Amino acid sequence: MSNQIETEIDVTLTDRNRVSALFRIILVVPVAIFVASFTSDFSSSGWSTAGLLVLPPLLAIVFRGVYPSYALSLNESLLGLQTRVDAYLLLLTDEYPSIEENDIVSITFPEVGKGENMSRGLPLVKWFLAIPLYIVGLIYIAYALLLTLWGWFSILFTGTYPETCAEGVVGTIAYWNRIVGYAFVLVTDEYPTFSL
Image (cartoon, rainbow, N blue to C red; front, side, top):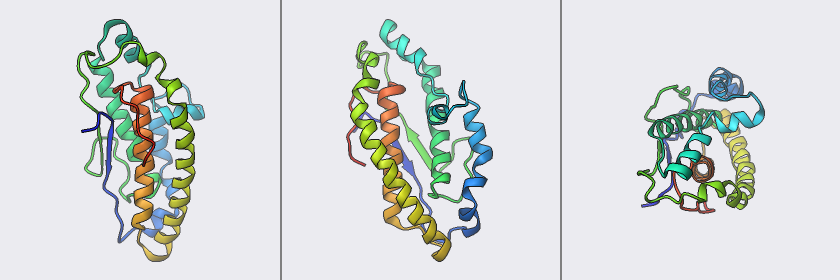
């Protein structure tokens, strides 16, 4: 079993709501504001981090060798919320993103013990070691946006979402969640793979 964040999204392929797909960018605004309210600043970088706690776990791992359970719970909840919003925005589902956990999106963090299985110095450089992952991730984002555009037209004209689009978009979301788990949330020392 991988020691990475696992992301599962139950994609709706058929009988899609064409009207909600047409206006999705407008419909997502209220929940996007809610997610943005968890950040300390409302800059564009704040949207992508969704208020995740990075510094307290970093300091706790480096100096005490433990991962604070409150930070783990909060980070898991916030990453799940961000993923539910992403799934809705990128047309994977027609169900409006819940601010509570639901059956459509499942985020599973690896088992984080008392730090005995984690390096105490590696968290200081993980963000730097992940630079190749960011570069590949930007290519995957462009790919996912093209697939979303294709899926959007497909929903508008046929009412279905192509399975190939779903696989690529879900893979991109899962890829970025693994990067977040490695470089920022620090729940694993295992370097994420470059594959979707």
